[in-house]
Length: 409
Ligand SMILES: *[C@@H]1O[C@H](CO)[C@@H](O)[C@H](O)[C@H]1NC(C)=O
Ligand SMILES: *[C@@H]1O[C@H](CO)[C@@H](O)[C@H](O)[C@H]1NC(C)=O
Ligand SMILES: *[C@@H]1O[C@H](CO)[C@@H](O)[C@H](O)[C@H]1NC(C)=O
Ligand SMILES: *[C@@H]1O[C@H](CO)[C@@H](O)[C@H](O)[C@H]1NC(C)=O
Ligand SMILES: *[C@@H]1O[C@H](CO)[C@@H](O)[C@H](O)[C@H]1NC(C)=O
Ligand SMILES: *[C@@H]1O[C@H](CO)[C@@H](O)[C@H](O)[C@H]1NC(C)=O
Ligand SMILES: *[C@@H]1O[C@H](CO)[C@@H](O)[C@H](O)[C@H]1NC(C)=O
Image (cartoon, rainbow, N blue to C red; front, side, top):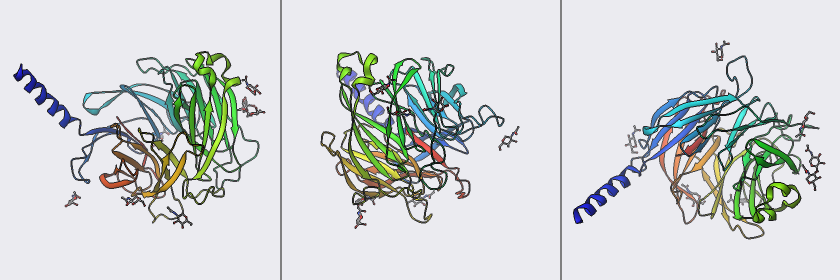
């Protein structure tokens, strides 16, 4: 008996040692999907190892992991140079960190930037920023992508005040499912709108609402955070005015289990707050194209919210993550705490580590072509020492071909 227990303890000790390292994936525009091993017990300059590289079309730009599958979207040229459309891809995660190609389909639009899977795993949605489309597909349990059931095209009546080409056409930047699985949200940077679809069944969605934001907001990404069975907070990060707008979404019919029939009538949207991603004393910057807020994430304990800022004005300055304390039930849930460095330029994406306490944050710095992993102080929310850093090659400011997204297994 005691020897069996001893064996058990020895086995557990062994498991603990193994699980101190993380598997991560990076979508790198020049190199494909990289699988990495991160061992936080090693020194920062040797804690990250590239385990494998997988081809995933022209300039892979977004990753989504679900169970033992991985999904990505390429920027364009799917299946070859004769096409401007992007492509959606599915992969099987293999033992030892490799991924194995399963399927791919045209995303029906140029500029693939986002792919998401419904909570039931049966519907895939992709956003194509330059083609102004969002496509919806049925997805089989073994990762095969069906023919598109919808291709939505977005329009602009007038160009917005955003500088450069940021608001010249409709720019759907994301197609994201709510945690309850009843909504699909599409922020359109170009038109300053968020489109809300009701999800009816596999591959079947219907436009029920659109939310109009102030001119020059530039909505980019949404984070849903469930408060109850009938209520979500919706945090919207916008890149042209560098704000987070917080909304509450009440759908009373959810509790009766019949939301599918009357969501449009019952869904109540309330605007709660707007805060700057740069500094709380500056609520909204005038529409421009300089600081470009990009990604948004919430810690598992619900206490801290993070947003990345990409400063395009000075290539010498470091870029930042903005950190907020969250009081989800307050009328104004966010309180700005401060900024920390991303140790590189143009942090297009970042993500919190997959351990329950989110002990680390990984940042993909697109222009300096590197990945930085920082410790996260779970009490204060601030970032601490660099626990890992790796360069993916030369920094080429004219082509900016570095990493686009990073996720943890
Ligand atoms: C890694 O960092 C250590 C400590 O800062 C340093 O001594 C070592 O030379 C570095 N190694 C490489 C390969 O840069
Ligand atoms: C496709 O594009 C790549 C990269 O620009 C180029 O190297 C290749 O020759 C092109 N192929 C065709 C068939 O045009
Ligand atoms: C954009 O215009 C096309 C063509 O008129 C139309 O089919 C589509 O519904 C419009 N999109 C939206 C979101 O209104
Ligand atoms: C949703 O509700 C709004 C306002 O009540 C209404 O104008 C609109 O036609 C409805 N849309 C659908 C798809 O039922
Ligand atoms: C947005 O919603 C408003 C109000 O329901 C409606 O009048 C308008 O046609 C909608 N616009 C689009 C593009 O769906
Ligand atoms: C916010 O901006 C104000 C005014 O420009 C400045 O005094 C303050 O130091 C800034 N705070 C932070 C945390 O950056
Ligand atoms: C992050 O910002 C906080 C608040 O300004 C600061 O105390 C902390 O030292 C910063 N972390 C790093 C690694 O610089």
